[in-house]
Amino acid sequence: MNILVTGALGQLGREMQILAAGSSHRFFFTDISDQEGVEVLDITDPAAVWQMADRVEADCIVNCAAYTNVEKAESDQELCLRLNCNAVHNLAAAAKHRGALLVHISTDYVFGADEGRTPYREEQPGAPLGVYGHTKLLGEEAIAETGCRSVIIRTAWLYSEFGSNFLKTMLRLTAEKPVVKVVDDQVGTPTYALDLASAVMAVLEDYAGCGLQSDSYPHAGIYHYTDEGQCSWFEFAREIASLAGHDSCSVEPCTSEEYPSKVRRPAYSVLDKTKIKETFGIEIPCWNGSLSLCVKKLLF
Ligand SMILES: NC(=O)c1ccc[n+]([C@@H]2O[C@H](COP(=O)([O-])OP(=O)(O)OC[C@H]3O[C@@H](n4cnc5c(N)ncnc54)[C@H](OP(=O)(O)O)[C@@H]3O)[C@@H](O)[C@H]2O)c1
Image (cartoon, rainbow, N blue to C red; front, side, top):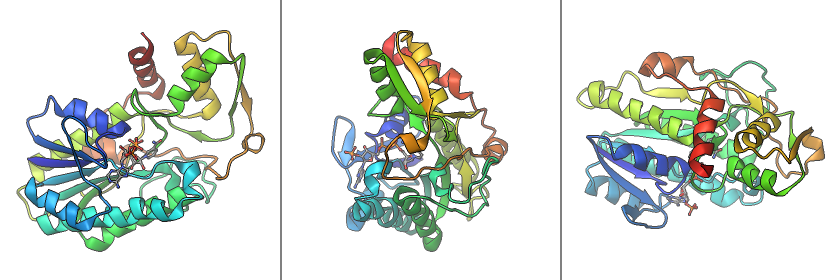
């Protein structure tokens, strides 16, 4: 099976590159900039997307590219929309033209305005709070409009050993400062991008087994994937400091109001993962076990 991956230099894209090394499928990695083993593909360019999908004879397209800076999105709406919605439409149209499967990643931030307090299920209507969540929801709708075969995986609070993320920021701050204050009134689930990449691989294997040769793919649809469990950003930060042995820093809770931000984030965005576990037979690790593995890779 030929698999075109976009955004291959991001957190998820790099973990996909690691897992692809042990796969029997042919992967073609692309991003907005090139690097060894990664070709340039700007997903906002519909002709380039179409040509690349044809050139590599894509059976699947895995979209790891996105506008992911939640804070900056509030003042950069146009680019955020272009990347999270219009470009996703380009990928879906190319997938439709090829009869390929589009595996697209969305976010827990499509929820939040409804002030839910139980894990969100896939069929619940989206209610985003900010520009980022809103454009990601529009991206999901753009896929549905094309009618291409798709698996949309909503995930949350991604971290990895690559790029910049909350984990790396907290490792630095708790090493440098005597006190770090972190919001304690937003609850979600930290998710190691490597675990999410494993879930994407499970979907690709399932598609190779039962979707590639048939007229319809029975497992197309929207799924939720995060690591297991839940915590606040404060609890996440405290665990990071503890795993790193940064005992001289006191990690203290604060409220969202004490922490100036342009964007309102969901107070609760935990996702229900029953569907992805049952459909693809995925076993999901707990967030703190995966965090420990990633911290070890970064520090020890
Ligand atoms: N990060 C999170 O906490 C989080 C939470 C929930 C859901 N998600 C979703 O999970 C997915 C993966 O997130 P991530 O954290 O791995 O993202 P990421 O690290 O920000 O990676 C995105 C990649 O896309 C590239 N890109 C930007 N513009 C592009 C374009 N026009 N054409 C092609 N590539 C382009 C970026 O390049 P540059 O870096 O050069 O711009 C980057 O390499 C995204 O769909 C995101 O919305 C993420």
